[in-house]
Length: 101
Image (cartoon, rainbow, N blue to C red):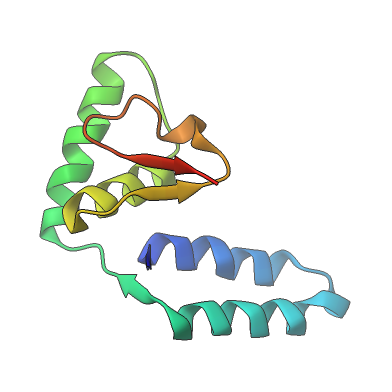
């Protein structure tokens, strides 16, 4: 199991948006996740696959969230399946395998 670097961004935003009473607990949870799984970088291979996915979604008129496309590109570049509770950002993307928990 691994997460993309952009997933860390999303988790960190959750920390910053949390109320004062929940921020410390959220920080602890995020640190636990980041320290227990591999974090996959946005490298040139991911960038190339991101460009292909972005061009495809524009061509077919099916825009997706920027972070979703980076997660999908990271999965493609690393030969992984995207695991998500919200498949809407990933269904129909070229070559992207999705597991709906």
